[in-house]
Structure formats: C-alpha cells, structure tokens
Length: 119
Image 1 (tube, helix red, strand yellow):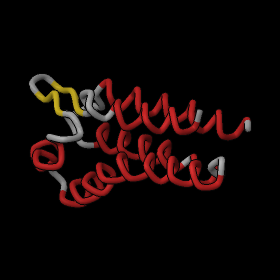
Image 2 (cartoon, helix red, strand yellow):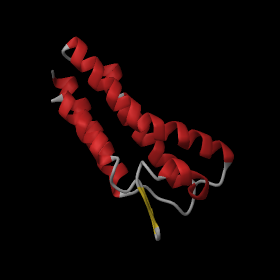
Image 3 (cartoon, helix red, strand yellow):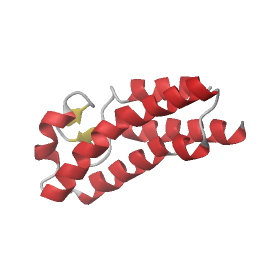
Image 4 (spheres, helix red, strand yellow):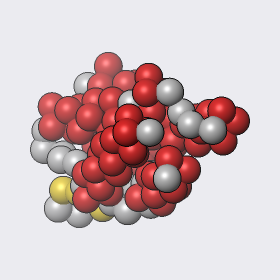
C-alpha cells in the first residue's frame, strides 16, 4: 500500500501544481518558470528545493518500504511536510496559488502516512 501511495504521489505531480489564470504548470514546467511564479529570491530558492523534494521524497519512501518491508513513520511523513511547505510558499507568493495537483499530492501523502502509521 505504501508503494502504491508513493506511485500515486509521483503521478499526481504531472497535474497542475500552480494554477492562477494562465499559469497551469506541472512539475516538468515549473523548475524553469519558478522565477515568474515567485518573485522573492528566498522563496524562489526554497521553491526549487521543494520541487525537487516533491519527486525525491516519494522515491525515498518507496525505496525504504521496499528494502525494509515498511517505511518508518519519520520517513513516511516527509512528502507530507514538503507538500504543506510548498502550499504555504505558494500562498505567500501572491498572486499564485496551489493547483489541484499539489492538493491531491497532499491528500495522497496524508493517506500514505496513515497507511504506514496503521501498519
């Protein structure tokens, strides 16, 4: 179940992560266009790190779950923290807002953590 949740998180990143007016960018387009989304330099750097973490942390959880049979709770919660941090940054960087892909990513991250916590 944890591996399925990680796969779902990775698939959801191909949906719109940033959605404001004409900005319907997914994870593949966003690293090149983050400068247009976030004006402040600190938010820009943090945003690029979080974009990478949106992909790396589900892979890490899946790898740990595959090797150990189940992921520890401290590892399983990482994608959730990244999604929430990215949502907060997108709310702070006006006028952008989180897209449907980021909200679904957060929901799947919560479900994956709950599944891992229950095991």
